[in-house]
Length: 178
Image 1 (cartoon, helix red, strand yellow):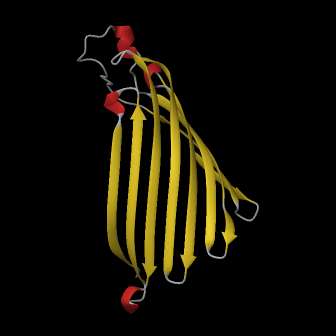
Image 2 (image 1 turned 60 degrees about the vertical axis):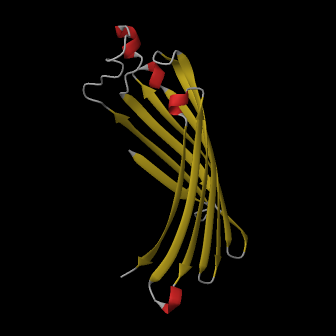
Image 3 (image 1 turned 45 degrees about the vertical axis):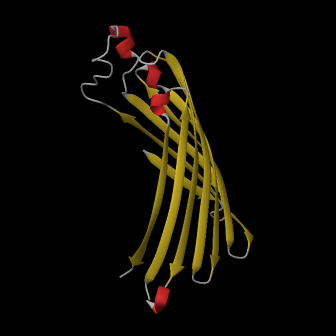
């Protein structure tokens, strides 16, 4: 289920979604020396819920800013996989003629409900994301064409080294519309 509403001349939007995840024959922890109760803490079947609020407003001609906050929750059967995520993003879009530049900065905190029996600790995680996009419309006079470049970086920190990760994406391309 997903519901999205916009109000005040499309300046404020609210989104709500819910669902569930069912994993047939979840064998999390089966290969480890865990008790049945500890294996049950790792079960990943879950009810999922998402709620976000954002607003967009112009700050000058050609510049839009969109701050937003969101909450995502997984109410898992296994308490070690049960968590709440709180996040915030700030987006900036600049347009000038054929040029468009967009940037996003985001931060997330995850709060887990129970100790993970595999690592014997309650997970504590946060992540930081940076994204940038440049677009040039009708390069070299080619109509219905866009030249694009993007850069994205995400760093996830955790008190469990297994869950720490960092990604860097660099890309570019040409988009043809027909």
